[in-house]
Amino acid sequence: MTLGNGGKQNIIQVTKLFTTLFGNSAGSILNVSPASLILLGDHTHYNDGILISTCIDKSSTELAQITRLNLDNLEEETPVSFRLLFGLIKILKEEGLLAKGFDCVVSSTIPECMGLGALAAQQVGLMNCIRKVFAMEIDDDRLLGFVRKNELKYIGKISNIAHHYTVQFGKEKKLFYMDLRSKEHKSISMSDDELSKGAAIVHIPTCLGAVVITYNLPGDPILKFTPDVVADIFLGKITKWNDKRIADINPDAKLPDMDISVVHRSDGSGTTYIFSDYLSKVSDTWKVKPGKGKSLDWPVGLGSKGNEGVSGLVKQTPGSIGYVELNYAIKNKMPAASLKNKSGAFVTASLESTSAAANVTLPADLRVSLTNTDAATGYPISSMTYILVYKEQKYDTRTEAQAKATVDLVWWILHDGQKYAKDLDYAPLPDAAVKAAEINIKSVVYDNKAVKE
Image (cartoon, rainbow, N blue to C red; front, side, top):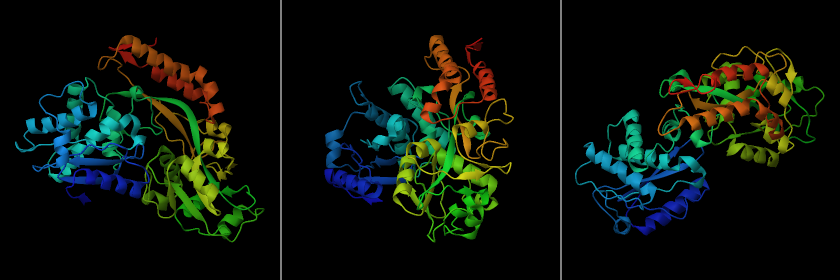
């Protein structure tokens, strides 16, 4: 979608368009100087932002004269986002990828929800925009290399490598790692392909969470579901609450002659990954399409953002059914269906049955999917959450004291910190998982020397 020249008028148009399309203001400041504005519709799939990226060709606009800075003299007082974006233009010129006469004065606005990833998102968004508009043959590895080089030059460190990959590769689900500098950790383990892309890391589980099936029916009946029924409801094959397959499982429930309204996440999320991972294991049809992932092409239903959005929409919509984290169902006093697990038992989601899901043989690296667990008393849509830690802690300007503080923190989480999990409606780790995690954290080193003996 392209908007023509017009300086400040363009800003007004983009802001209105963003709010209309996405229901989230683009913010009060949008510094642009393009001959054309490109609105990229690629979700970041990390924290739901939409990038508005901008670029300029040999033309210029009135606004360019107002915001123009000298690319050869990016002083410290220049806003960091300007330094980084201009720095990328300089790199492209030095690499001979842009014509000598190309001039660019560019910035972008990232929605507030981008948080820690804003700087990386701006750079990757700009690079993608330029790459697409000018048909540059820059592969992803080279693109990310430019971003790293740029950040080291202008801010002296990598702001958050994890977000470069999350933003850039979100749609393809090629998620990279988060480190403790981001104060975030991801809720799904990484694939072998992902691990091959970066420095060695170790997975440290922190606790367990569950995803529950919640619904809105008259009288709040307590329902049971089998795996095939859950899959066919979310595939749109079962469309009525009094369908015989549901009624046969719930002979004592008063099921209304009411349409089923499916509610799902509209944003990319670990909750969706865990739910779809479960459905892919119990339904061959689901495994083929839509499959598993943080974001799906849903066959039916209404989308809403976040667990809070799904739980809110279910509560407001009679006849609806959705999936949320167990803690949201508890806090909002929403019904949660019992699910038939792999052992044939109908299990109600609780902190105890969620912990029990991990009572299985665990791999040494603890990268494991617990959905459709083999544990006899385990709830079948459970998952561990992880902190991912660099195995070699000597990187950038990191000190040995910082490495020790990190390891001590993780050790505390594995032991003393477990008693706080239940108060937050998360399940503590079983003993076997704690013991395996201890071995993993003891493998962390600083300059090849163990941090914790």
